[in-house]
Length: 127
Image 1 (cartoon, rainbow, N blue to C red):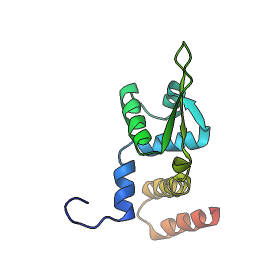
Image 2 (tube, rainbow, N blue to C red):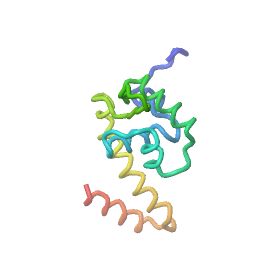
Image 3 (spheres, rainbow, N blue to C red):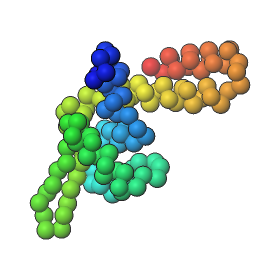
Image 4 (tube, rainbow, N blue to C red):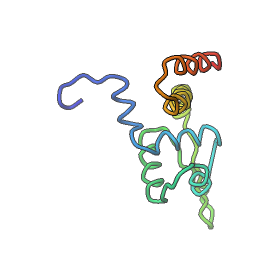
């Protein structure tokens, strides 16, 4: 980091993937392999604008995680897919997804440690 503090892997990862949409974009490309812009936009649950999706895709392309494929046709056809480097995000995105689903269940429970423990145990069994 520029201020002289040490950088951890988590610092670097969060710097690359911070924001609401980058992880979701990568997740959709993991599960759909290759998508056109509007297909990707529809696949994302939520209201992402074209402007925001374009900006986030450009950042992911600059980081080497996503590839833009221009088919060079008269009617413009462009698709997006993960690079091999981008595919390396699968394992931790999968872990984040599992953790998020468990967290969602725990948030909906009353603060009862036995219920939380039951949810955690069921999550461990699912792995």
